[in-house]
Image: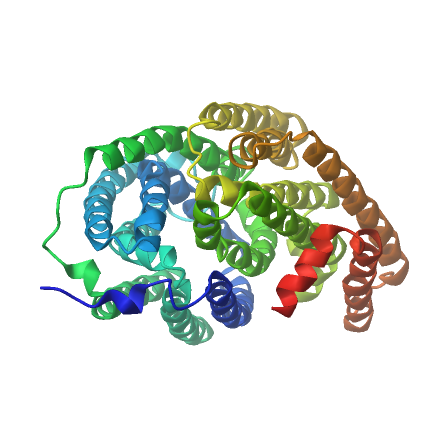
Amino acid sequence: MTYNYKEERLVDTSRTEYVKKNILYGYISTVISSVFSIITRTIFVYVLGAEYLGVSGLFSNVLGVLSFTELGIGSAIVFSLYKPIAENDNEKIKSLISLYKRAYRLIAIVVTMIGLIIIPFLDYLVNTDIPMSEIRVYYIIFLFNTVSSYFVTYKTSYVSALQKEYIVTNTTTIGTIVTNVIQIIFLVAGGNYLSYLLIAAIIGLLQKILTVMYLNKKFPILTENDVKPLDTETKNIIWKNVKALIIHKIGDVSVNQTDNIIISAFVNTTAVGLLSNYTTLNTLVSMFTNRFFSSFTASFGNMLAKESVEKQKKIFDIYDLLGFWIYGFVLIAFVTLSQPFVQLWLGKKLLLDNVTMILYFVSLYLAGMTFIPYNFKVAAGRFNEDKWVAFCQAVVNLVVSIIAIKLIGLPGVFVGTIISRMIVVIVRPYIVYKYVLRQSVLYYYIRLTIRTIIAFGICFVMWQIKRAILVNVTIVSFVIICFLTALIPNLLFILIFARTDAFKGIIEKIRK
């Protein structure tokens, strides 16, 4: 049977229009999710306490480690979709989707098996007074949520490659609203942690089923059975990229998914709960920032396939400044505002010490500064050149974090994270400049160093202003420091960068 795939083309709508649509719906979703997340978490803390927060944070990291079994297959296949989508090569698209589907079914089986094998060893990871019999039940629910998502991923990734991520965003938003509302009702009514998790699992499963049904109807290519075998050349390219991405996956997992595990094992699970209040703030903001920059990835892939190197460099510089502006401001805002916010929100007893807080947010800033180079690298399909870096990053993070946490306590885990992320901050732009933009990376390093010094300097200034204003933390004084934090750093950024070509490019993009 032959379908008209006009609905799926990128021809009638420009890359910029798709990006704008993805960002608009993404922000609407993020605002809604943020409001409900804050309300739900507030009630959660007062009803169930920080210990259960720690359990949630720990298991999220444990299952994040299991995501290693994905091996980077998703990124490799999605990259392979950009060109056939741009060329309207339906046969190749169907072949890639079929491969993606088979791969993720196998991954789901492997994750399930490894996840079940871990159960007897949870005693070594969980440092809490909650009965281990309950802990195992909670873990199984987390495992179910993770495994079930693999049966949907290949469909949603195809939609993202089409630059129509807003479709999936809308279904996710509806699921989030329904889940949080019911969870809030159960918590207020005296519900326990088990009911809280079951609500999310059941509604999440229904959301996945409905999403699949909707996507199958809107994009018939997802359900076609008349699929030709993938050509050998494409298979070899995918396999080459997957082999490189395996190492990248090790690095990503070791840095992004092990902190809570190390903290739980070497400090306690309650400390994970305290940190989770700050990771919640980061998650809420990251939903804005990551969604914003992720919206460009498919467009970068399309642009790299069509535009000149000069145009690519111009676009990179524009988004690189935009990335610094956003992540630099986020660093300043977090360092200035997170402590008084958590104090007003949950009370002094759930605060982290200042050193741990600052190190945590510095590590996030470094991660943010690699986002644009990473998007360019992925869009260009450059997975193989820096695969060794991920292995070094993994070793450095684990070794330094464990040694440092034994020596100085909780802040030590982020010392390891910062040092390991510095490796990526140096190497990832080098790959982009050498293999994609074909220019020297030296100017980029100088520019990044100067920008980072500027961000840290403004952080110091805002910290002193905060100390002067927040002698007593009240809602009024907090609102004042929020206003100053929004105003002063951005005014300084404008004064510093207003005459640069990249800033002018940002203004031009906004006007479009």
